[in-house]
Image (tube, rainbow, N blue to C red):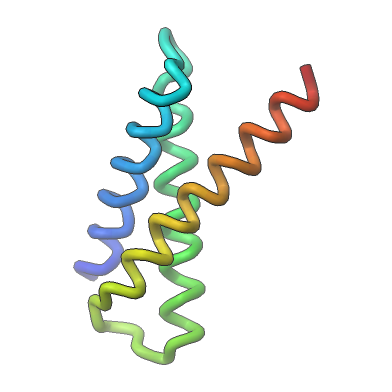
Length: 84
């Protein structure tokens, strides 16, 4: 349970930092935060399934959550730039 909360926090923080870096403003500034949370939770769940430790909070799990958030944010940014 705590791992999920931490994944959400790390994902939101990562998305917020990316939003600051990209200087998104207005009504879409929450989108990178939401994408960061989704990426972090997806990566955290996949890491937990792969490592066979469903209830432990591991540092590696948090790193994978941040990596998942950054990865999904990069993919979304790349796709949105190519569609313009």
